[in-house]
Image (cartoon, rainbow, N blue to C red; front, side, top):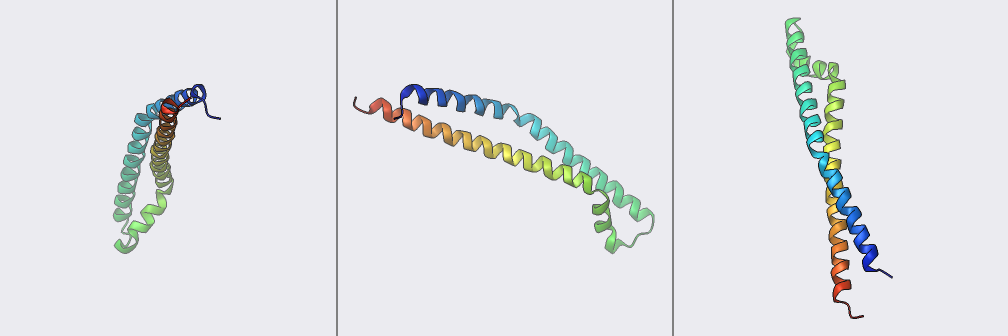
Amino acid sequence: MIDCIRICKDMERALKALGDEGNKSIDLIARKAAAMAEYDKQLGMTIGALKATGTPVSIIDKLAKGEVEKHLYKKIIAEESLKAHYSRMEQLKAQLNGLQSMNRYLDIKPH
């Protein structure tokens, strides 16, 4: 049986988790921005260096991307971490919405 006290405790936990997750947003956004900027910078520098050595233009892009793969990896991790963060926030919101609906039902249910 579902009771008001358990629903209220679950709502408190969901609200706290949502708040905690929300506090992570700025850090994750900053990490993503830094990783993207570093990747772009390293790729540009590598392309420039390859052009300076006379590397054929047709293969410069592939070679450069291969040389900066660790920066691409960090960029992808940062992007996916932010996506997972937003997904977790949506899950928590849905959970909280469900708990609120249950609480409303208990408030109007005849005793």
